[in-house]
Length: 202
Ligand code: GRF
Image 1 (cartoon, rainbow, N blue to C red):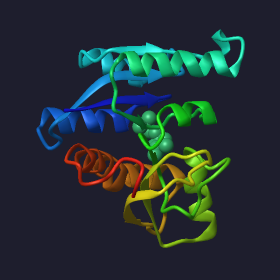
Image 2: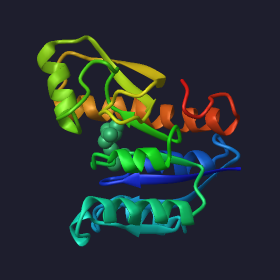
Image 3: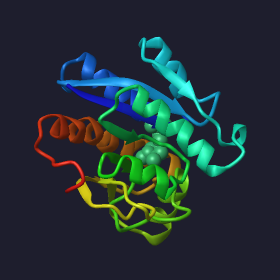
């Protein structure tokens, strides 16, 4: 059984996609052992509560320095017994200490086809604004391993989504979620649970 910790900051629709996939047995041999948020009012925490999943809020401002904050997160994840850390809209840049603690065992979902529209400053709607501004006709989502950089780790899977005439950033964001993110993330986790993707390798 693959035990996962899901790290969130906001709406948690990707978390919901994982919960639904497990409930509907499209994702097997996987258990969410912890949902960790850096924001107390994240809707994702309510989703965890509603589904009887352990959840915790760990905020940077409650710690005197980065190292104490890192250790609080590392301890919570290790105490929950997680094998894999899933970043699902977690808007905190992870320190190298955190990445080292779970080396090769952290995955992230990014709402573009990396290496387009990724890296520092590309998060949330900004990604889709940039894609529309550049005029690309295809965008999508990427799940990748996390290393010390921002969106630089080995790519595991990608899924393409058409950009359509009349798209706004909000409309495109929603289509990328529906057609790519919510399918891709459970699919990648299933592959990891099945041992088809070696942790730390693409
Ligand atoms: C998603 O677009 C994800 O790719 C990005 O942040 C957004 C989070 O959405 N990293 P949600 O909280 O899962 O609804």
